[in-house]
Amino acid sequence: MLGSMKKLAGLSIEQSGVRYVRLSKKTKDIDKHFFLPLEPGVMEGNQIRDRDALCAELKAAVSNGRLKGTEVFLSVPPTQMIIRKLSVPATNSKQLDQLIQLEVETGLHLPFEHPVYDYVVTNTGDENTEMLIFASPREVIQTYVDVVEEAGLKVAGVEISGTALSRLITIGCNKDFGETMLIQLETSYLDVYMFYNGHPVFMRTMNLYDLGDQQGEMSSLKLGEISAEISRMLNFYQYTLHDGVARIQEIIVTGHEHIRQGLARELTESLPETRVTEEAFLRIDAEISAGADYNDYRLAVGAAFKPYGGYKIDLFPREDKEAFYFPYIAMMLIGIWMVGVVVTGTFYVLNHGEISNQEQRIAALQDQRQSVEEELRLLSVSGLGQAERKEAIQKIREYRNSPVSILQELEAHMPEGTLLKDAGYTFGSKIDITLYTPQMEQASEYLTSLRDMSFTKEAMIASLTKRQVNPFGSGQDKEQFTAVYQVDLDAGTSLSTLENEGGISDDGTDE
Image (tube, rainbow, N blue to C red; front, side):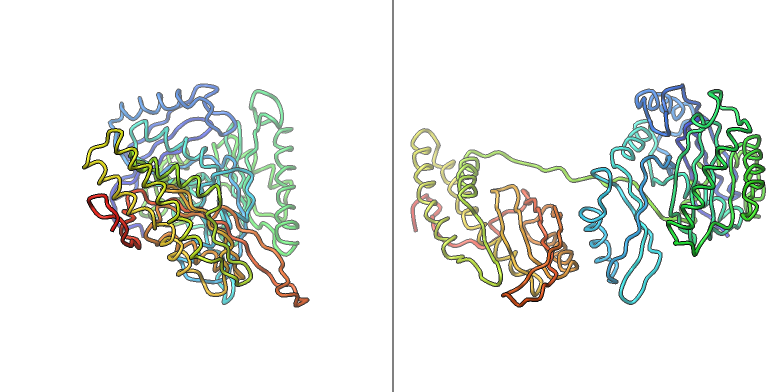
């Protein structure tokens, strides 16, 4: 079933400690592992509280095990994880990614900024594609990745503990997740995941110290309170998420034996209509030898099996490109001039089909050219040599017409029926564009076009809003979207490759 593959490794960071496993290539047995217990205060509420301490302890364990450079699949707690349903118009895979990016950045209203996210498609129809979005604060996930990589390991992928655990149950124990609740139980906390048609649709972490005595013992009172809380989750699943037409059919309880068995008995008694089972990971697939370590290291083993199937959700943060700037005396002078032009209004307005006069904008730029050339002439008198003057003047010649060429390229790729509201140009830095479009898909298409343009380094949508318009007093409102784009200019692209007309000779005289 699993076939042959290179050795795989998984790492889980949990409230109780850090667990590492490496699986044998042939038998899929655990052939190397370690457990790193954490001092109180390092992890609290399933979050890293003392990053430096965790990194130092993990680095020592990696060094002792001679594991530096090993690739691992990382399982992290579902801290601040958000699951949202989303439906977008059916389209190809490339456009689908763009539409999802639009929704995540402008439409989902997540309770945190700068998310890292992934998605799974749940249904594909002729008109719409339905999916689940999994999002978490980038800072939270990045902290886990940074700690692991600073300790000497290489992170090959990141997922939450629920998908890692369900993968091990699916692959190793041949169980399907239809309408299923999965409970990951520890002495101080439990994670609850609910699945619908095999996809996780709900998750929650409960602190067990908040449900009884402060010693962390599983008293009958605490078990009763946990059972009551799980019953409320089941009602939420049935009546809020699915309007009473679906209900959880099975509850799978995982964890250490003495607390797992107690909770399973309590749930069996309090929820007689729901099948309650325990999973101790003793019935592993025939190609995998069973062992007690599978239960102790279940999250790390589930993460290690990631290449074999199950959920492909990967929350590994993508790195953003850093801007790069080269100072130059003449370019600084031109930049100051261009800021003045922008302040007075370098805007190209296209509203209700009326295009502003581009010749006037060109004339305004050329009117300013003479004053800049005069300033450069004065600068040359004050001390610049002949070679430096030529280089400065060459920069003027390359850059002075670039706004016009950029505007022409922007308009050439506009989707049919869209209107360019305004375009603000900041020299050598960025362009801000406002576009009216009758369809949300056209906003995504234009974003794709922007990213392929000759002057673009990075392009993104700053906002996407919907409004009702009444064109030409027709008496009938129509839907229209306003998309605001931010385009970072590519400092490494020579603007002399854009449209460039004559004007100054190489020796600094007018042609």
